[in-house]
Length: 425
RNA sequence: GCGAUAGUAGCUCAGUGGUAGAGCCCCAGAUUGUGGUUCUGGUUGUCGCGGGUUCAAACCCCGUCUAUCGCCCCA
Image (cartoon, rainbow, N blue to C red; front, side, top):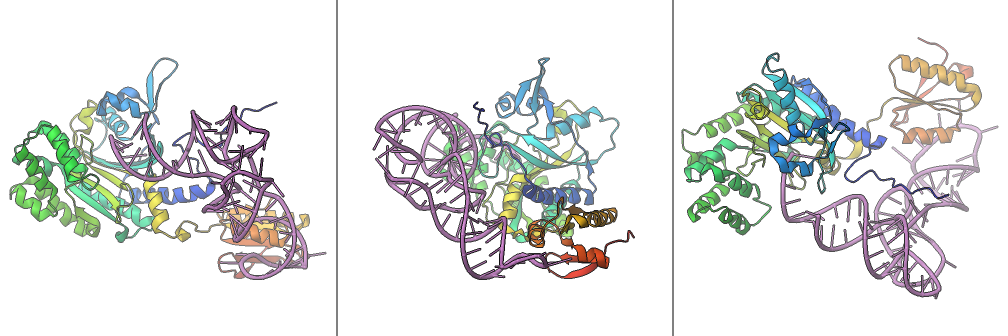
C-alpha cells in the first residue's frame, strides 16, 4: 500500500495563514477598515471570478498571460481578478443612474496574478482599494492620501519610516510637449523615467534612442530627470501651468491634513499604467529597501473604458505583502501580540463544572474565554497559558471551589486578584 | 519565461562518500497549587521530493518542487 505523496506546501505563490499569521494579517486589515470608515468610505465587495473579457478590455490581450483564467463547463471565459479596478468600474457603470456621486467606496480584495514572484510579491495577495468616483476636485486626492496615512499610523508606523512620492502626469505631458515630443512617444518616455534609480543613464538613453527620439529631445528628457523640486518644475512648466497649480494646491491642503511631512514631489513617479491622467503617488519605506507600499492616482477615464459615462475618479491600491514585511522589519513584535481574553483551567475532573460555569459567566460578559478541555497540572496549565494569546489565566483547584473564589492572574504582570466562582452576576 | 544561490530537528545552522550533530525550543522529573531562574533526564529527523552512480549518498550526477536574489513585469 503506497499512498501517493502529497506536498504539504501550498501551490506556488499561494499562502496559508496559520493563527500566528492571522494575528499579523488582522492587524493590517483592522487598520485598513478603521481608516476607511474614519474617512467616510463605504465598504463594498464583489465576486473574485470575473469575465476574462472585462479584465482584458482595460489592458489589452497580452494581459491574459498574467491572469489565472479558465473556461467553465459552458465555455464561458473566466478569470480570477488580478485587481479590483475593472470590477469597480463595472459595478458603478451598471448603476450609474441610481448612484449618488461622488461615492467613496473601499474593499479588501483578494487578487491573483500569474507571474514570477520576488520578495514582496506573491501570486495571490490582499489589496485595500480606496476609490472616490465622481469628483474632480483635489479634495478627493487628499482624502485618500490622508486615509492611507491614518492606516499606516494605526499599524504603528511613524512618519519617519515612509515617504509618499507625488507627481502629476499632466505636468509630464506638459513638459514633454514643450520639448517637442509628440504624444505618441510619451508612453516610452514615461517608461524610461520610471527606470530612474534602477538602471543607468546610458541604458535609459539607449531606450529613448530606440524609440526614435531626436538627440535634442533626449537631452530635454534628461533635463526632466534632473528636476528635483517643485520650484524647478514650475520654472520649466511656466507660470500658467495648471499641473503645477494642482501640485501646489495639493501640498497646501496636505499641510492642513497634517500629512505634508510625508509628501515629496518626485518627478520619477509615473505609475506605469496607461490610464492615469493627473496626480499620481507612490509610498516607499524611507530606506527604499522594499517595493512600493501603496500607489494610486487620478484616472478620469475609468468608466469610459467599460462603456460608462465620463466620470472623474481617484483611487489607491495598498497590498498586504509589502506592508507586512515592513512591519516585521521596522517594528518590534510587541504591537502584534496584544494579549486578549482569559484562559481557564482546572486541576482535577471534580473542578470541571466550576470551570465551565466560570467560563460561561465570563463569556456572557463578552469576554473571550479559552476553557481547557481536560484537567491539567498547574505547571502544564500555566506554561500553556503563558504561551497562549490570553491576557489572564484562572486556574481552579479543590481549595478554590471550597473557598468560593479563585485567582485571576494577569499573564504579563503576574499579578493576581480574586474572582468569585459560584455567583453568576 | 531566463539566470544564480539555497533547502538537514519546531527555529538558527554544522556536517562535502563511511553509525545524522550542536545551540535554542519542546517534554518529563526535582516540585499532587502557579509559566521568564536553576539542576537532571528525554524526543528531536519523509537530510525538500524522485531517480541514477557506488560495497556504501545528507554529500557526487540527472530531473523536479519550493524559497531568495537579479532580468522581465507590475499590484
